[in-house]
Each structure stands twice: as structure tokens, then as C-alpha cells.
Length: 80
Image (tube, rainbow, N blue to C red; front, top):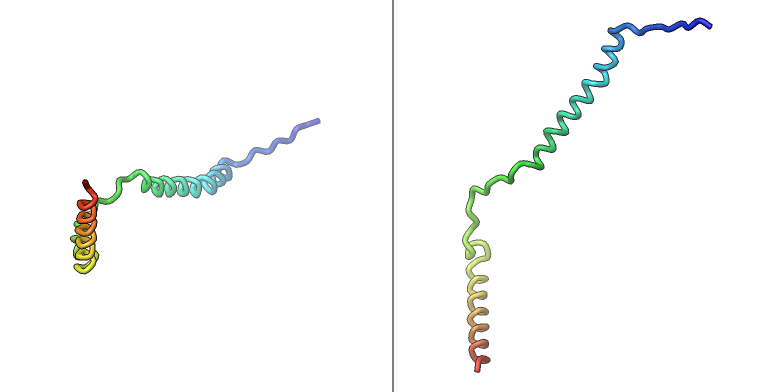
């Protein structure tokens, strides 16, 4: 039996590898760029939080002060 082997031209092989390699390389590159976000430090907060009275309103803060005052008054009465 005689073997008839046919060689593919180098240009066809190169084109086939480019058709597979370019999209694969692009996908790996984009995956690495996206994964870098996981390893970066969180952004620093540049603005200080609002004061307590501005976040909850004056009425709410007065109610908290009143409740704390009442709690202390009751606690002092319970101490022998």
C-alpha cells in the first residue's frame, strides 16, 4: 500500500491559528483587566459624613437624649 500524504500550505495553517488565537487572546486580556478590579483598594471617601443632627433631624436627636436621660435616672434609683 502506498501512502498518499498531502501537506497543508503554511499560509492556511497560519490563518487557522490566527482565527483561533486572536479572539482567544482578546478574551484572556479582557478577563485579566476585569479581574484586576477585584484586587484594587476601595476608593477613599473624600467627603465626611453629615453630623448626627443633620442625618436624623433635631427632633430625633432630642428624643434620644431624653431616653438616655430617663434611663440613667431609673438606673440611679435602682442602685442601692
